[in-house]
Length: 398
Ligand code: GAL
Image (tube, rainbow, N blue to C red; front, top):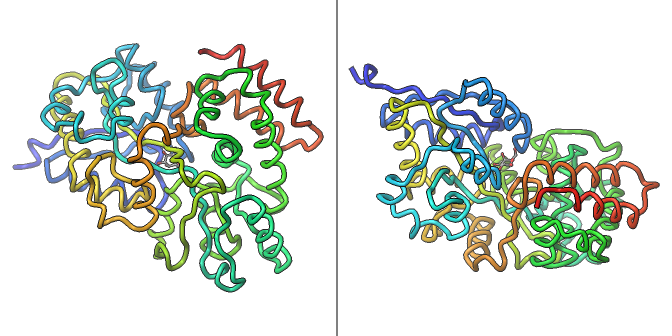
């Protein structure tokens, strides 16, 4: 009987790792209790590059899914085009304005109407370290680059790769943005990646971040290949590398492999970034599929933001709840630190470039392409790269 009422909702997303699938299952399980059948339309691609392309073509073909994962600045662009369902009744009955972090609330209601459902907040400037290796060599997590260099050399002498990494552009960009923050501060970072000020790109602080990226190369696996982020995380888990800079979805993944926080690994901050939260917020949007889909879409929005689902989902995903008053005692040490820093407010919250929080897709891709060019060709100088970036930034949408 119940099935007669069941509503099927297609959800387009890019989550395919063990923890991501479990996180989705926790959401879809909750939806099933409400008679909503959650049908996955998965486009595997770390950081959602392929998913974004497929979603756009499906929109153009008039074949929108009911729900899609759409993160960051693009929410505002799509809202401008009238492509996103407004969720005012759900937001007001759920008191979202009060319960959500102000930064999350601003992100999801760019034009005064909530148009996205926030799931969780990831911290990008996380330095994971393998506890077994650190204990064996009597190392402590580095708080500055001198300490990092010293311990990386020690590890190398012992035949251990200091830093897990992939040459996938988004994974290198994820590392690089933490270096920009490390060499500067939140205001400078925003000048570069949000305002795209040409001055910022030729600034010595930006130059130092480029030099740092190049100098970290010697600590990465050689040859550096385009492994998925799951394989990069596996290097840390298996002790093939001692450290990893990655958003804390890697924590969710390690936990899902049975590797517990503060037993197999711990989280520290990328040197000189401990007081900042370089963030990435996961969100779902609802696309117009007529009145029939509307009630299921609203139900999904309501359930996803409820405190119990927020706790359960974020524990699996590695992120923190989007709520100002979550169940802190149910979080591990990484998430508690992440939550405490994020709650200090917008001055310490820094939007991720690689994960679409800082700027539009074209600008992000143009900047990352230059960083890749610099990284893969050691004969390109820091200052030439800076000049090219400054020239490119003048042509980017502001
Ligand atoms: C991010 C996303 C995370 C995780 C990661 C790896 O952009 O926000 O939730 O999926 O990509 O694919």
